[in-house]
Image (cartoon, rainbow, N blue to C red; front, side):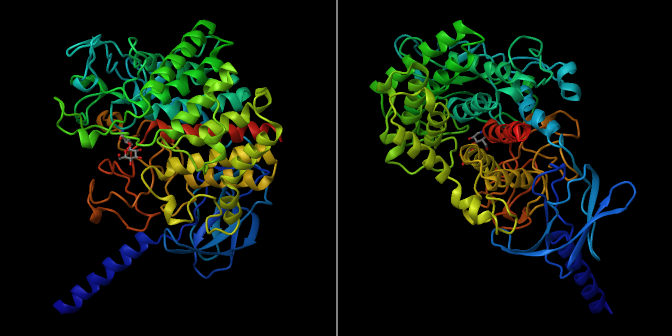
Length: 580
Ligand code: 9MR
């Protein structure tokens, strides 16, 4: 008797575990789909052959179709089937049901289905601002007092020079917190700031019409430029005025506890000037100079001057690297926060040179070998070569030093970044160009998905081939629920959104809902034993190695560099749809 009871218990546990691990609920984009575009749901292979789309209110069947075999998704080990309802274009609210199976979450088909999330992923930067109270009229229930005035930042021993000896205090206010932590890092600001400004350069109409309800919403600048200005003003304080070099970060010696910004008051330091930070700064300032010129000409002048000064420093100091772990304990205090150590500066040099060339038209900054002789890969915080290519291609008609043939070759190089991925995605289990390969899953995989989407949307603009638009939409689907974990990876959006992000204010504010519009890092099998413990994760498979828990900083943190390409993606989709 005893034996059989425990046997029953064993099977009950097994069944529960199985149900939990292998939900048969079809995965839909939890916000919905655009009427005239591709629409898919993905479901584990169950054997049943058909699906229906029902009106969410009346239950009336509006569309029916057959499931097709999606094959095996290697990163999640799933065999999947696909429900394709692309030809169903009627606006409304729906539920998808698999014959004899479960209902999906509700979703919409509508032109404006992404409007809310498009605003929210950009408004997220307002919530990340240092040195300003977030007032209720802008921040709603996430209102909070000012954190980190940063008027008392000490030059760290790694950064002292004659003009700024040990003990020197500088003011370094404003800027965005990087992530779940409260530090401000120049290198990671590089790709983040660029991406937002590049989104504006490519899709100005969307941003001109956007109202984010931020304190500057009523001035004459588009809100995105006001928001980015908050970070640029901080960045300008990171340049040593005595030589042009740029500090790596403003940081506490170690990470603060999970407290609100106003309670995180440990001493902050400006840490070692180095070449990658200085070149990233030069690139951002050169780009900012041309973007802000029509609105704030004197700011544009100072930004350009700062960019040139930084460039000069980097020419004299062309390989000074920030090696946090190697420098360990050389300085007091020992700084152990985010490292952002980048040991190869050739991409930063090409990028900064490209931005300076575009803004000044001085071709001595332009280095054709920087794109011709190099592989072009999806960018990340430490791999910024493609950003230079993006800008050169976007501004190509103004650049007389580049031959017609080279312009064509540049365009092909950019398209080549994602062509194969997009072609493979047409038969990939989740149909997205991201997520079918184990190698897509590393720290910040969702940021990688966003950056892939950004490259794909550029290929679409350069070719007008709808396969790229579909590829970009399927990346949006992935982020909003059509993925192996079934989560919507954007806080505040969808029926199964992530709730417990690694983000200090969201953890400490006593409010159940996390700060909205933040993109979670996403599955990453590489660090599970370091944060929550491997046994806490539901799976070690790359696409399932995710935990919606505060402890999981390696899968569920948020950062400015993962949100930025998602801003680009949704804003770009909105603009391109408008033009169709
Ligand atoms: O995004 C960074 C990732 O590429 C690195 O592998 C990881 C470990 O060094 O660090 C990530 O960046 C973190 C930064 O160091 C501190 N702020 C939070 C960032 C996101 O986790």
